[in-house]
Image (cartoon, rainbow, N blue to C red; front, top):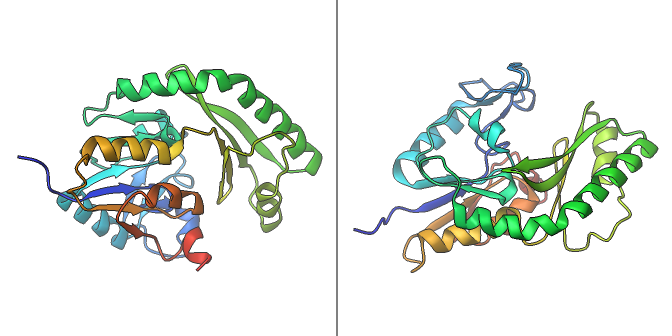
Length: 246
């Protein structure tokens, strides 16, 4: 019998949970993800409402996380997801058993390998421009399965001035078709043809090829709207980048 449950594609950070610093005095009901160094100040938590929402969605729908988190960072999420997962900004799709979906991985390897040099240029030039602008960042290229996937610049010290400077960081390269994602203290540059949208389109077709199942997209960032619009219904947190523009 075909699965008739709704499909929900949901972002994680700042949607289903967030660091304690962003909770504005809300009660931390449940730890949701552990920081790489185990520091509770950098770990992520749910409010009671977020925890109840997660439990409801995970029980009544096929809930699929759609996250920028790498495989290592996703492994530190302490939530009992039961289905597929889109990680590393769409470069990897995990099957329900936690293994990479090889057809998608093969497609992404072939697509991203020719962009290695361009990603290195973005990293090098971005670092130089950040230094020139006095922006204190750490930066790297996210790698999964020996595959370079996207470029990240992350603030070391978060102030209103540093947030504004990073959001407006100019990287003088031809990046017209790249996705520029900025939210909180992170700027990510994602190659064309990859990203959350491409992976969501693929998995949406794989799991709902006859469009018989209702689908929902849940996210907080303006760039999340691209994959959310693939679905029938959009859901956003009231305290989010998207809501702040309404």
